[in-house]
Length: 153
Image (cartoon, rainbow, N blue to C red):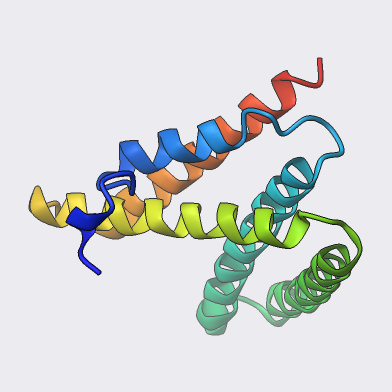
């Protein structure tokens, strides 16, 4: 199917951002959308930290043994936390009505947002596409956290 057949689908990062924020407007505390967003953002944050630690471990030949062992220990603990978090997501998917579809929708929207950011950066001949992508997705996640947690107050 062609994008033109589905005019309601987002075509830019800003449209994707608005669609996601609109989808989450009724994500009150404890709802499947609320839980899914929290889990999705937490898992993404842990995965970014994992990438950072992996980079440190790769560059570890230039640091002392004690520092390298510390990074490797942190890496193992983070891998365990990610595995436990993924298990909790799987369990919540089975036990909470509406959670699985909310999680899939939120995760897909964040991925699409990243796709649009890359596409727009390439169209603008940006030299730091990866940096723009990371910054933009982190800003989106911050906006989502802020919008979500403001409703709790």
